[in-house]
Image 1 (cartoon, one colour):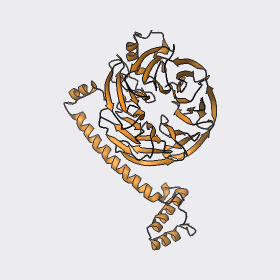
Image 2 (cartoon, rainbow, N blue to C red):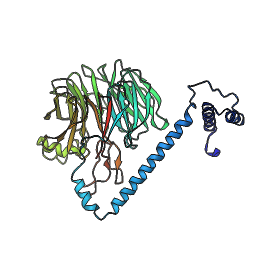
Image 3 (cartoon, helix red, strand yellow):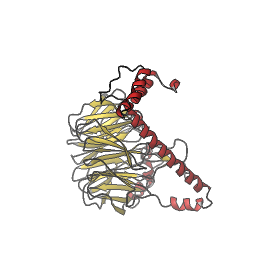
Image 4 (cartoon, rainbow, N blue to C red):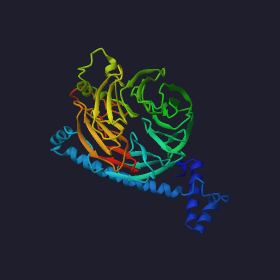
Length: 449
């Protein structure tokens, strides 16, 4: 065992063992170990030392991982049995014809936050969901078991957004305390960088697809671009006349879409910082704006009566062609991001629209509102096909799972969609069927089949 550990790791292990023995009152064993490990100067009166409680933390982590392995093994056995079943073909064809749409009740209701939830997001590979809250903390949950894994503290005011990079190695948060923080997920979510530069509350932050940059939006009316490696702000975009509520990069990194209290959404050229299109039409503050994934384009073109995209028009098949926005005017609007034309207005919610998500199949749009409901819209005809009473208070955030299951190869994007192969071929990897919502009722809900 000793050959597998560095001197620093061995020293930390010895000290964590000494700390445990001392805390349990095993003084004879403590003295023997202290003498044999040359730790005569070991201090027992520092409650903030990193090895205090470390042994207990590692042990509970091992138990939790062991339980997860057992759960995964039993699930794997069930899946293998299903694959071997002669009825698989008929059952799989019937299930594939009916894609998962969330339904009540939720699988888990996660409670621990002491103030409204502001944002929820999934890890791209682990069964982890992170929640940000006005209580100044971020909580990490195992969404399969419903157990909370840890609470991250560091911000001094409301945490307004949280995001993982595409590989899941880092997590980023932003806050009303004017800072952005980067956390190392592989090292117990250690806060490795704190970025300063905005002059007011930071309301939104996202990794670019390559994970090398961050984009943030603020109440100071600006959008900033940051280098992850150095922590430096490398660009500042100005144009909105009021608080910028959110900013999201396109899958190819060429465009940004933002939304603001000035009742507009803007499409920005990421390389130059220039506004390409300004989307005007809403009659109140915009709460959210997102790009449509490529696999939604056929349904959107059918809905808008645009016909098939011309063969030579590459822009019509590239990321960033369409945008949806949600507003306090209780409507959702679908836009052509090239012309700025509003293609459709979805009306049905009774209060502010707070979150929008496209279904992984590309056939539906999900919206969450302060009317406490989730609505599911058929993208081919614009009709609301389902309403779910989801929370006991305003819904502030909604996100779909990013992990990919099945298939092989690299025919996928950053989690907003799974790109199919050719028509008629197997779809390959597909997005996992899990949805998360957060609410002013201080709960996170997990929705699965």
